[in-house]
Amino acid sequence: MEKLRDPLYRNAFFLVVTSAFGGVFGFTFWLIVARYYTSDAVGLSASLVALAGFLGYLSTLGLGIGLIRFLPSTSVGKNHRINASLTLTGLASTGVALAFIAGVDLWSPIVTVVGNSWSYAIMFLAFTVGFALMALVDSSFLAARKASYVLHRSLIYNGLRLPIPILVATSLGALGIFFSFGVALLLALLVSLLFLMPRLYPGFVAMPSLQLSGIRDMISYSIGNHAANLLGRVPSGILPLLVLHQLSASSSAHFYIAWIMASFLFVVPRASAQSLFIEGSHPETHLAGDAVRSLRFSLLLLVPGVLFLLFAGPFLLGLFGEEYSTEGLALLRILVLSAFFVAINSTFFSILRVNKRVGELTLLSSVVGVGTVAASYLLLDGFGMMGPGIAFLSIQAAISGYVLLRNLGASKRVAKGLMRF
Image (cartoon, rainbow, N blue to C red; front, side, top):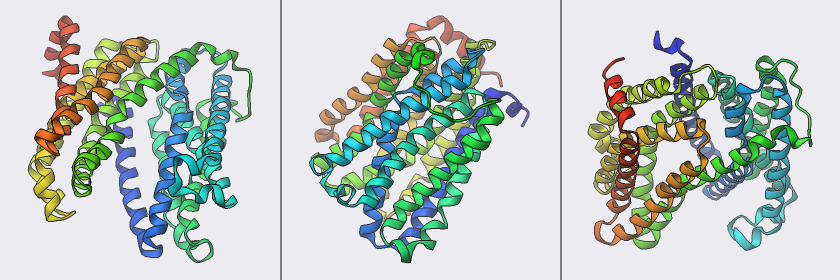
């Protein structure tokens, strides 16, 4: 509790808690809708929500990262930066959503209902824009060192969406699930813009602003970081499809559950690294010392988490079925061990972001994304489902080796610093 008075640890803690609550609420939500809606309705709505979320994230252009990096050092005009970023993201997400709706028959025939139903089309457009704007609002909270506000927004969003599908099940039918997500999202966004943002940024009033000159200095930085983030996300999107294509549908299911379970563990180092990025963006902070403390905090939480999943893995996978434990346990253990390398790499990536070394960040992210997929493709034939796990562990370890060798002097100081807490 004493450590949580430090904003570096406090923000990391709130980011981890937000992810944990989001997972619990999400699991509960799908349990509820599974009781009131058909499996076809659940599948369609899940696809639409995932699509809207992905397109919304794509449309942010990385401006959320730019706000975290540039707002703390902006003495005047913070509200203008936020409104200009929201406007640009709103326009981008509107264009992307409309383009998707217009060509839905071409690139996603499975959700043609979006193009054939005005109700679905309007909601899809509104929710895609809402997801994009919400990402920037969260980044504005983080730029002010208030990760607790992200938790508040998440509780509003998740708390609102639980009862809605029950209330509208009879009146809206299959549309009710998608409607529940969107209404909760837009209401949480409205509360954030009207009540939470003005508390952090005095005088803030959300309004369109096409005067983009105030954010010109952060656009190239934001887009470069956005490209790096997208490259880093390639494995999570491609590997399940790769396993499905080269092995089987059942192998893909076993892989996906093990991957998701390990991903919960990766939340810890990534949240800690994001907190380091937040602190490093403030001019009065000491980046080198904060990096040591951030990595130390990650390891403090990772060690028990890794041990828990190593020993409890058979039981947790067995909850999904005996074959999940039999087929996925070795993969889960490989992925779990990679968490230590993820901690090192996430910390270094945050240092690169703070120092605006976007080129090196993009290069390393491409190695993580493209390298992991390429190595997985080569290893699947010989190692089966374990191949992607070996590839992910190897690439993460190689990046960590590069980081440590490239910063040998600093690595020695970090090693000494990790011995103290």
